[in-house]
Amino acid sequence: MQYTRGMHELITLWMSWVQDWGYAGVIILMAMESSIFPVPSEVVIPPAAILSAQPDAPMSFWGVVLAGTFGSWLGSAITYVVARVVGRPVIMRWGKFFFMPPHKVEKAELFLQRYEVSGVFFARLLPVIRHLISIPAGIVRMGFGVFSLVTTLGAFAWCAVLAWYGHRIGERHPELLKSPEELIRTVKSESLPLILAVLVLAVCYIIMLRLTDKKKAEEGTESASPETDE
Image (cartoon, rainbow, N blue to C red; front, side):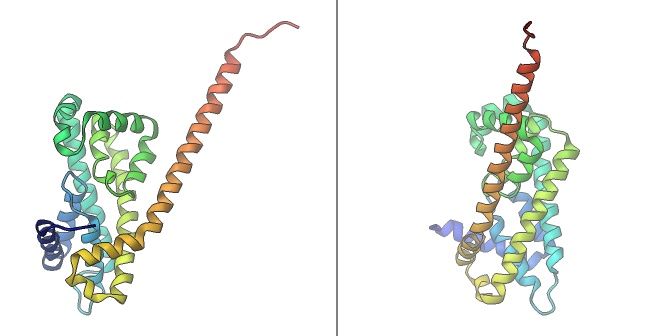
């Protein structure tokens, strides 16, 4: 992945927020990451976890996880409320300017209507789509309590994994804090097996639901068919 000078400056700035602002920096950046702002969580949680392992660190490992989880929920909740308030027509007209063209909105709506709870949870564990899932959830008016619960659980799992990877990577390569691009490459390469495992689990879950629906449909057809006389 190639970085432009502007992207390098942004990543350096975001990492400085984590280093200078501590938990507040983590919360703000993860809230941005869970909305429409393209802040990679790989440049937030792992550096914070590395810092938490330093002597006399102002943050703890689990403090980083909880701050990241709260920030993720906060950004998701704001995006959800905005999408729910402005409504589908506005999103369909202007969503293309925020990475949500009409065809993606329609697919997301159909997906959430069928897998709403599990769909939001798995989305929190997957790159790219996790910062978009709140928009269709708001459009289809998913229950805010359910949305908050699965978002929090998924965000907690993702932040815990990233913090664990960051802590482990920091023990071997403490110099990565001085190289944002190399830090992101390292975290992404080492977290690839986890992402693949989540994808496999999600696919298996969807297949199971499809088979269950098919079986129910067949049973419904059999029960609805008229009995024939012997």
